Amino acid sequence: MYLTWLDSNSWLLEIGGQRILIDPWLVGLLTFGNLDWFFKGSRSKERPIPENIDLIVLSQGLEDHAHPPTLKQLDRNIPVVASPNAAKVVQQLNYTQVTALAHGETFTLNQSVEILATPGSLVGLNLVENGYLLKELESSFTLYYEPHGNHSSTLKEFAPVDVVITPLIDVALPLVGSIIKGNKYALEIAQWLQPQVMLPTAAGGDVIFEGLLNSLLQTKGSIKELRSLLENKNLPTQVIEPKPGERFELHLKKRVVNV
Image (cartoon, rainbow, N blue to C red; front, side, top):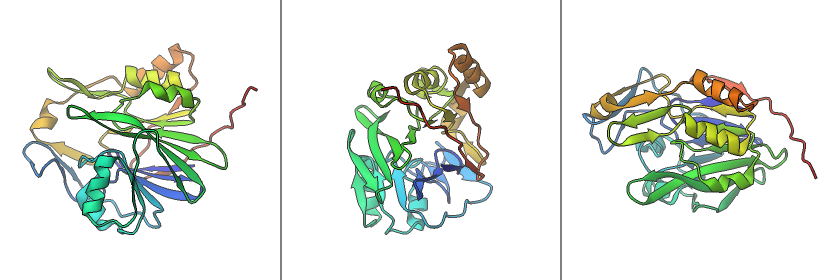
């Protein structure tokens, strides 16, 4: 299994011989509703569009997960698996193969990777977006991705999971609380899923964030603190801090299944 972190929530996952692009923001500005004064993400240089993509996976319909300028640059014939809300975004952009997954539904990519949608982030008052479990069918290695740290207790039934990509530190707003949940939530999901490896997402990478919203955000916790918490709970999980744009291999061990 190979991973490339492409900044923010964007990942290129190579699993089961398939190249899967997750929540891509690779070109242009990141804004919400074109309100630059409220929030703006920018890059010193744009990321090249990865080649030979077999599938695009979108967890949410918001711009930082279903980024219209990036999606306009990608081939509209690439299959897409998305939350129902994100599916609307790519359908409006005339993508030809869009599968909207409700929670608990699965999609199998080229008989190599099974993707299960799980309850993810609460957006607005009552819209719960998607997290995903991606299983390499030949090896049974499984990866869990949820970009805001909202983890459903239903995940416990899928333990153990080999790789977890989720926020590892909190990002909060005054009077609102955590909008990105790491820290104790990352520890909790580690206790539930017993992963071999955890990786942070929703961090900046090689990007600059500006605007009113960004000026109000407060961070809490650190990778060092999480490692200490894992050690105190006798969890052998390795926490890896990837460098943006660098492809790396995860060396996973086969689990011994007790019958």
